[in-house]
Image (cartoon, rainbow over all chains, first blue to last red; front, side, top):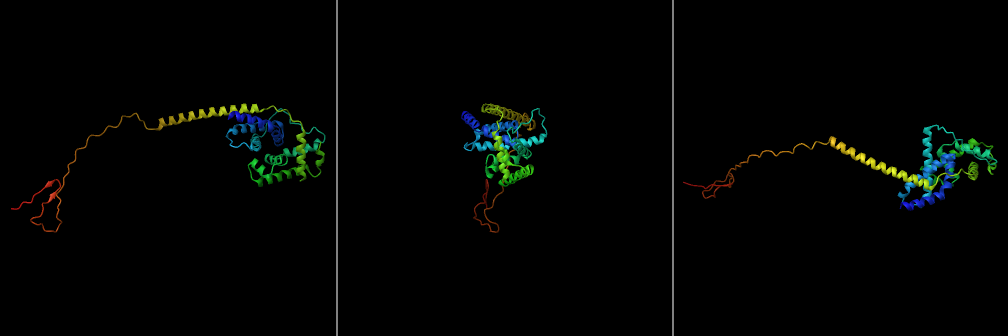
Length: 169
Length: 115
């Protein structure tokens, strides 16, 4: 049983690692935190795996663990307030036309964790409102309101003069 | 809807960026998972041992002392003496006949003597 689960877990890790890593990066805003959150999520899945009766929807379950781990981590970080580090923040958008993307990225970074998670799941992972609600453990009404607030924040930060066509590289 | 497109475009541009190399692997997660399981098992065994010892200590401290001598049976009671009075077989108010059967009493027979 353990050996079967180990091999199944290895296959799942190889299959999902890249996409989940990028989703974690979009939510966290930096690669270091994304790595930590992703590893915690994979570890939780590995420990819970033998207890699961049905492994058919395991990728969705992993996504759910990832989002909840991210929100829990953000809640803990809020209590820690500040964290001293000697590492410089990740540099983004080295491609031409990077400034506009940076503006969107900064607007996204300033949002609360839940709003940010909703926007990433809705507009990157293309999940339905119901699936996002399941992943976040909240009602569909909350997802809709968080999504609306997130877009409103984005609209407020970007302003009317922002040109989305300049983002393409 | 325009801002949703902006978001999607931004995410797509970010996806095109080359991410830093991934230092983690499935083997690392499995190793950590086994260590966590082992630690949890150790904590569970130690915790149950401590709980058992605690309950035993509390029981020894608070339960009554059982090392006292066993109770001695008391002295035998004196035998009881029963006294019974005679029971009339004829109801009250009925005149007693001469040839009436003798009055029987419990454990005692009396004979009616005339003369």
